[in-house]
Image (cartoon, rainbow, N blue to C red; front, top):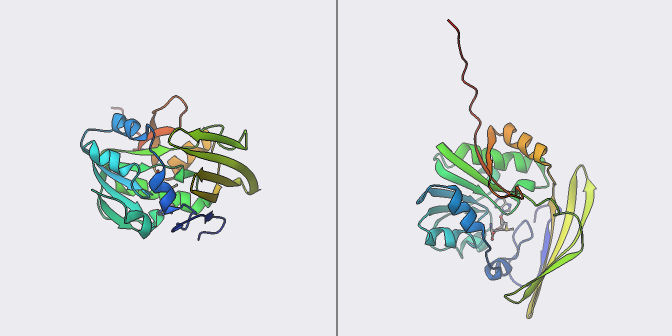
Length: 234
Ligand SMILES: C[S@@+](CC[C@H](N)C(=O)[O-])C[C@H]1O[C@@H](n2cnc3c(N)ncnc32)[C@H](O)[C@@H]1O
């Protein structure tokens, strides 16, 4: 388990505290639509932190080719229709590039700055010329108005219980998922980033915002930040 991360409940738990069985049960929202609307049809997508394939499977169904990366073999064992690679995102170096690199699930808010830097460098290293990186950020109210809960129509309740500062701009977040037959909890570290801090983090990795894809600015399309072309006179 990574330091500061913990998970409880039935079944295998990943190093960042996610329960494999829980992620197999969670329904997907409009994320595949957002991705599909922001990239060329049939693109080859490198999906970082795919989990059990909650996002992978709808993308494959929409005709995308997906390479799914996760550090949890138990998660990857449930991925269908995609090439899978087990390992840490920050160390990934496949020696190939992709039309689209996807870093969703708020992974860009990793508690450890070095992990975040490594993840964004991985994005930059694997994006093809003319390609893009899609990132899912936390919403603005992510760490406030707690505790809060949402009752999902499919029959479970998700509670964001608390988000407590634990030093140097990092919060320890506790979430609980209650199903009729099982309860899972996850504790994880998250580093909130203002839009400015987020854009600085991208720049450090040689990326820049191409477009905020949603009005809440949660979904972002980034591209390699190419140096400005020097204009010579004479
Ligand atoms: C919150 S889950 C989300 C999974 C999937 N994106 C989804 O929406 O269902 C985060 C996933 O990222 C993986 N993960 C987290 N940090 C990672 C890292 N540094 N390297 C590789 N995998 C990581 C975890 O194992 C877990 O499967």
